[in-house]
Image (cartoon, rainbow over all chains, first blue to last red; front, side, top):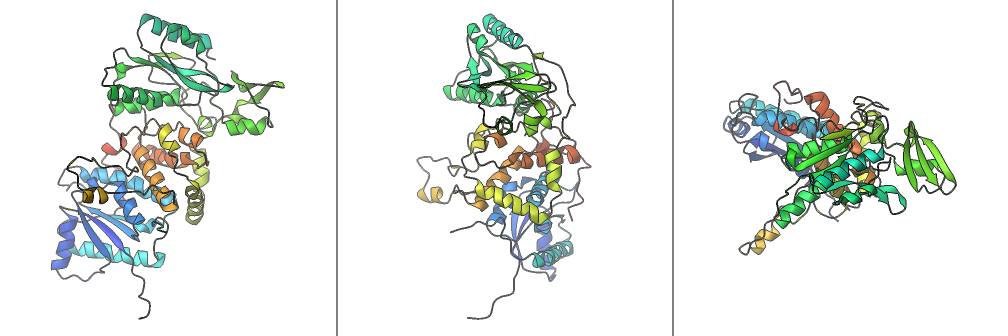
Length: 143
Length: 343
């Protein structure tokens, strides 16, 4: 067979329906070049993120998880991203506490007008993930 | 020092007057010690009650069981249920009421203060007594008195107290109908979160090395879940039965149900289970330490819960079990919550 493919980190990106999803869309229609490592999953609001989604993504082999929502004050549901900020802060701390690398989990605020920012966030995330190699700590051991 | 007779008299009076339908407390265990939880329903049973350094069970758990029993039997409570509660038990009851699990008037809290003392950790006692089997334990000022076959042995309380009690700041049940013992709120025999602070000096790699070894041992007996008064959900996310099966549910739907966590006791699933539990307990765990005590493979679960508790305290100024009417940790926010980690 052919030679080994270079390692490409797999990112699961949970994007809020109202801002970040539209932001990623804008990055696309603006023809901005950015790595194709992120698999977007649209969620109704960053506040609807259950910590289970993040743990489950890692469990199923994601190398990094990105959660992105509207800027503070811009939430479609008024306060969803405030709740997300608090809840996901706890998840981030817990992941670091048990020794998962800090750069595996990331959060960002990307508005519908910030296609360029979304591209930059993904680009930075991929760059930060590459040296870490594939994520084996939380990945399910299927025997 | 609390006189046990005061506790018995209080319970007897309440039962005799019919103010409560039962009292949850502790009685002597079958070999004398440790004490075991008991529900008494008649005034004459009040003499069974004990109060000693082995009353470590969090009795709030039995309030939850009572509530579930009533719900399943489709009965109304009638008179409130009495409960003897230490500082940590009372905080657990407050969290349950904050979550509207039951109402304040459904519970009559007989608060007992641990004062300057606390509950024993059995493994510490066993180590100190060199194999002698104690049959009774009693508070004795700064010491605990153990009755053994070779006569009474006294051990300094600090040497044999559970870690959670050493770090406890609120040994007095703030929420109570009647309280016995001195209010020593604010005491801490050891700095709060001392074990956590010690652990956090380790590097990322060492932390992972530590936790993966711990989680690898987990046999998924769910003792931590069973003993926790906060784990009252009728359906738990880790049970793979989380699907309402109706006659019209198709085989495909059953096969494709979401399984967040597999039941097999492998490391990755154990980690997900314990992480999920820690997150679900964030802002609710009152650090009664029961999960760690009952763990058959000695996983230091308090570390995880302490981490969440300290995060809530330091970043969000949140204290679990502080007020019945207040908002919960993850259902509230402040404008100045930390957000620097977000890009």
